Image (cartoon, rainbow, N blue to C red; front, side):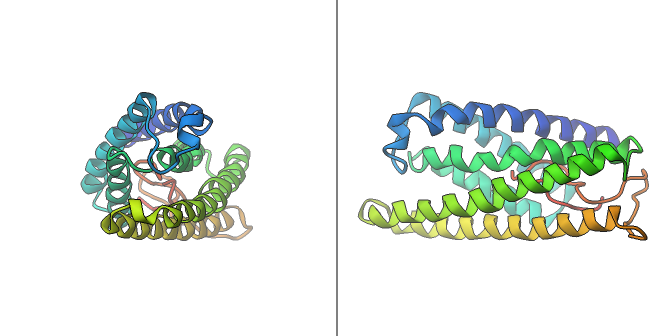
Amino acid sequence: MRQMDWGIRFASFVNAIIVCAMAVPILFDPAMYNDKLFGYTQYAGDVNAVILGFFLWDIYVCFTMGDPGFIVHGVSAFTVYLITFRPFIQYYGSVFIMYELSTPFLNIHWVCDKLGMTGGTLQLVNGIILLIVFFLARIVFGLYSSFWLFVEMYHQYEKIPLYLVIMISVINAILNSLNIFWFYKMIDSVRRRFQPGGRYEKTESGSSGIASRPVTHLQKGEPKDE
């Protein structure tokens, strides 16, 4: 299981960097920017296919780990990226994958635990960066982008099937709620870890649990004791 954990972390780390870098050009592509709901390019389709494949793998890992919250997150994200091939909201697919900017820092935090660097300077600095990036990418940017997604759908509601509006609305609410909940848990875990006299639980391998998330996301970067 420990070897599998390292493999999962490495895969999510590399994926986060690659998909975020691949998605950036789409954000500045006039063809996509000027038609954020229905715009489509071959490149955008390829990027979303890569993301979709990762979330399919993510679902498998989440079911293997048996965590309901992460299963819901993985299935929700997979559904959204599957919808983009209608095509619909492919531009926003590249917007919301920017949530994964927090994932590398989450995995560094986890590695610090595994290497016996819990509570050290590197983990402290990385933890601060993790919280800042998570807050800006998933909370601030996430809610801001969600607002404009709904504005776009409102202005073009006659072109959108009702079931898509309902699906996107429900999934968006789920993912934003999970991000807010996980951010609260991350703050609490970091506070307990570095607070004098603070308490945090140790795992059998000696790691403590701010971010024992088996995969991304979501991407996740969410705290979970193993």
